Every structure is written in structure tokens, then in C-alpha cells.
Image 1 (cartoon, rainbow, N blue to C red):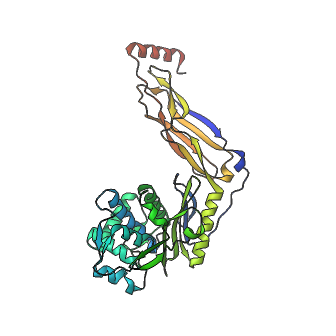
Image 2: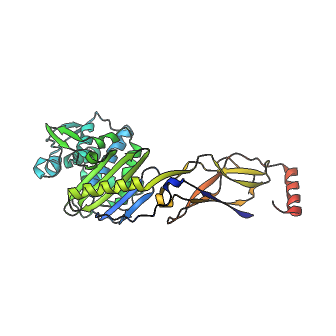
Image 3: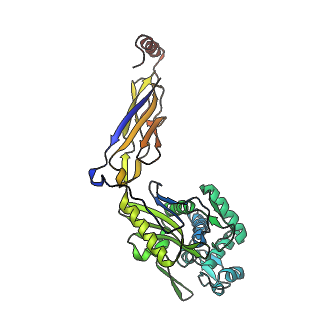
Length: 381
């Protein structure tokens, strides 16, 4: 057996070549910038640190609600009842973010969603928790279970609102991953995040997301602010066929949050692009076959191979097909045969599975006999 390494240099166009990598700094205490399609991180600063997420943790509350809408157990036209507890803890008298619900109201689920994502209503979150789980404490258990299911490793929930609590912590990485899932899983509901105002109980409130007003293509997601957390933002924007997601915490003012978030997002769109290195089904290599009705089998990728690459790295990308050959028949289409190693300057190598493009049947007894004879006489070629 031998290891076959097929090295390829993929040139991605001179227009983006020759730029030098730029360092980036931000006033945010914690920050992440992610490409939505590839999931790659374009910028990282203290991304695993568990910090108070303030109202950004409402994204988990609305995620759970939207998931129940998607599975049909709750409908937008259904109503949630407003308890005295929800009014006292999250209503107008608290002085915090509120939807201005009244005790005894029966509010449509659609309005509750708007109250959370547009008005950041603490009362709307508590109402959601009580109507889904019976109490906010039990809903927090559900939030933690959901985070574990999603693989969010740096999150802990004690309430549905994000109000200060020692056990209410999230990392900006988890918030970015959660934001990505909201966009991916609920395309029919995501539009609520881009609505700029909502009126309930004859009180009109504007969306607090600064990017909705200053940046073309911005369409979500959630601000946050407490004294401990500072001014925070989980945001997403689209430019052309690309979407970026950013999360930032610890900024000193609403003005700084607005400026820093737009600056980071603009930098990401300007300095990076997505490149399709291989199309789904495109042949990357050929592998010799042993005991097969054919002498070789094409190796391909099961999905498009797309990478987010900085302008300074776009001059060349090295692809190396790695596999042991010959491959013993029978071979099934889609069978994993080896890996395609993707190497880019200043990045960790990435391995993508290489799979057989088609079936290759095994020859009969006589065919195997002559294959053995040829091997002993000539060796494997």
C-alpha cells in the first residue's frame, strides 16, 4: 500500500493579491466576527470567556419559542397570558426594558416575539417562560438543556431575560453560534429582527440595534446593556451573497457600540471573501483499485468546498489529496476513501473527506487469481 499525495495550487485571482494582512483592534472587551456560510471566524477576542450577556441572552428565549412554532406545538396566532409575576418583574414599574404588558392580558405569540426582539421586553420573556414551562426557573432548565444540545459549551442560564444573575453567563462565541442557528433554522420568522419599531398598548418603541439605521444590509439581532456587561450587540448583515455575524461586549457607551460594531462588520466585508475551491462532485484525484472491475475510481467531495480567505492569503491555496491505494473492491459510491487537506497561510490545515464517485464491483475468483499473479510478478502499479 502507498500513500498518494496529489498537491494542487489553486490561484484565486490577481485582483485580490498583494495585500498585506492587517491587524485589527477593537474597544470591545469580547468580540467575534463569523462568516455565516462557512462558519469561519474572521476576528476573535476573548471569545470563550463567559461574561454577562445582558439582553443578548434573550436570543435563547426566542430561539426556544421559534423552535416550538416550527415544530407546530405553538402557532403565531396562539395567545400567552400575562401573570402578575411577569408584570412585577418585567413590567413598566421596573424601569427596565418592557413591552408594557398588563396583568391578565392575552397576547398573541406573534406580538410576544415582536416584544422580545424589537422592544427587548423583560415582561415578554417572562411570559414566554411561564407559558412554555410553567415558571421562569423551569424555563431556565430548558434553556440550559437546549444550550447543551446545541453544543454551546460556555453558556449558563438562570432566567429568560438576561437580568443580572451570577449564573447568567455566555461567551461571544456561543452567542454567534446561537445567532447563526436562528438565521438558519427560522427563515420564515427571522424578519422580525429587522423590524425597526413596534407599538403595543399604544406605546411605540424603536428597535435598539444601531446597525439597522446606519448600515445597509443589517437585519438583526439583539442589543444588550447592564452596568456589569457594558453596551453589547449581536448583529448580522448581508452584502451581496455574503452574510456576517458579529458579537461584541463591554463597550462604554451606545455611541461606541454603534461605531465599533459597524467598523468591525465593514472590515470583515472589505478584507475577506468566500472562495469555492471545489464543486460538489468535482473529481479531485484518482485512486487505484485492487480486485476491482475497474482499475481506478474517481475521488470527489460530497459538498461544495468553500473557504473564507483574507485578501492577503488569496494568491494561492494548497490542496493535497491524501489516501492509501490501492483501494480494495468492492467500493460503494460515497464511501470515504481519503481526505483533501486544505492549507492556507496563517491558518490551521482543514481536512475534507474524499469519497468514491461511483460503485466499483469486485471481480470473480479468476480475476482475483490473475490480479495476484500480476502483483507478485510486477508489483502494484
